[in-house]
Image: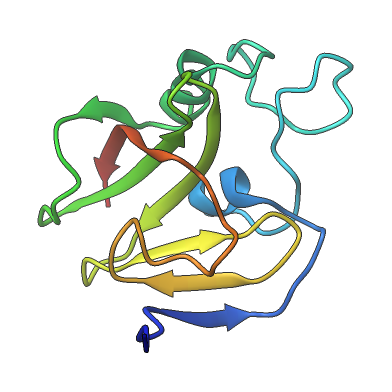
Length: 135
């Protein structure tokens, strides 16, 4: 079966930032709610791996929860992914044309059409929460 490649690599691998930072629009530091405080985490957001902590991190920079991941004129959206048990795994940012951009851990950044368009081996679960802010 020939599967069409649905994503495009947009930048090379780098350990300088991760998907959370990239979704927030940063490419100069790693975002992680580690309990030791070794990595950046927005002030006021709980330092724990939970959906509520991930949402709080994005709320701290102006996002609010919303319904749906459809493109809305004047808004930028972030999709927060989680495994079925609720553990958050990933975040992707919607671009102004409706496509999405993701950072794959320490690896490449990609642009993709849908939430399922990841390279083989990436198992982020499903989109559980979407947040938005005005552009």
